[in-house]
Amino acid sequence: METKEVEQRAQALFQSGLNCAEAVLAAVLAGQGVEECGQAARLGTAFGAGVGRSKEEMCGALSGGLIALGYLRGRHGGAEGWDGLAALAAGVRDRFKAIHGCTSCASLLARFGPQERMDKCIRLTARTAGLFHDALQTPGAVETPAAACGCAARQAGPAAAGSCRG
Image (tube, rainbow, N blue to C red; front, side, top):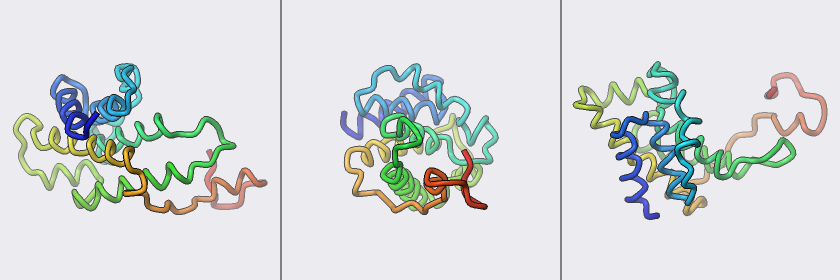
């Protein structure tokens, strides 16, 4: 599927009643040949409109794309590394932020100003689906080395103070 088709699918899904996160998630998966998108889109429901319609957290379209990355390239267990996926996710987030100036739903909405029938969110949703599709097609073009968080250290031994737990 071409990027334009993924964007059109995301737009159509949003306009059909899915939220921004669900629409990006389903469109990105479809763009990668995963056609059971109806079930997978359920994973994105809570992330719509900045987490539970709060409009306070990360943009739902960005969240939906990140869920798609995990679905498509995520690891199957704690013994597997995730540096590659972390670099891809960080790179797409950085590109999104460079394009839009921020990743917060509330900040994006403030920048958009008045909307008619969610027109600006729909366009952002479509473009975000295309951004993730492109990143999956050519990961090296967007990968950004992700900072280590200490999670790998707990596999080697007892967790150090301040490292991730979970």
